[in-house]
Amino acid sequence: MTWVRLLRVADLSETTASRATHDGSAFCVGLADGQPCAVDDLCPHREAALSGGVVSDGVITCPGHFRRFDLRTGQCVGRPLESVGRYECEVIDGWVQAEIAPQAQKSSLRDVLLAHARGDNPRRAQGRQACSAGLVAQLNTVSVARPAQVESPASGGWRACRSGSR
Image (tube, rainbow, N blue to C red):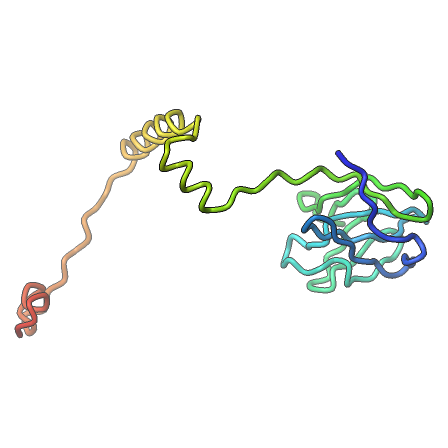
């Protein structure tokens, strides 16, 4: 985990949140009980930016569909199974800093495809065996019905349509 400087404490208000970005990720930073708190700036319901919402008593209301998230915990109020990512914050020299995990290096699609073509994936054999076993298990439990073939006597059936003669 790395401590990252997000924004100045002076930019925060008791009633509004601010958006901060770092390394392609967006964070919603607001005050709860006078202390800065940071959560992911993306509502899990409709992916609205939480930073556009209103803060009251440490709870931010999503501007999209009015879901409310506690800035201290990241939990959705009244929906215990719904939450947003929460980050530890501290104030150093007037700046809000949050403890953020570094993002994993992403491979380009080209690199992934080339590695697959070369067989460089060490889990490839394991994955293929597991996939084959899973597929066989699924096929053993599922009965496959053939779709009904529909032919119209007026059109001469499906062969007439394919050959172009009617």
